[in-house]
Length: 133
Image (tube, rainbow, N blue to C red):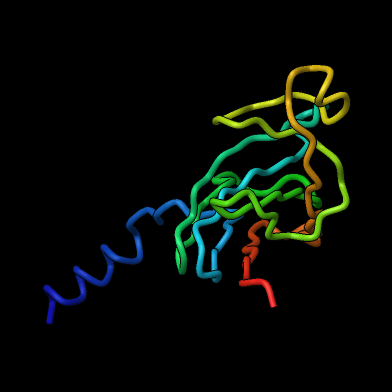
């Protein structure tokens, strides 16, 4: 009995594993390529790409959420948009980190319409991508 109590005490005192703060789960039948945008300090930054297989999730922001709004762009491997976004921001064809959301074409990037996700000031959020109707 003493060994069991010591083991349970260890479980409760052990540090918790890192928890994803903003995850995107792909519930479609295709691979999804995902980019996100958010304010970091005083500047807006977009980042991509996370490749998420069908029925898989990716932790796209690992830190506690500090912005109420996170912007998400997703497309399938054929280039078809998976979300109905209305916030124009930048993407690139390869992995990217782009500061600022305006003048994408003038700066050598591509335009994309990101979906605004209201996390309601929570510390964690999961967005689910679904197959088109």
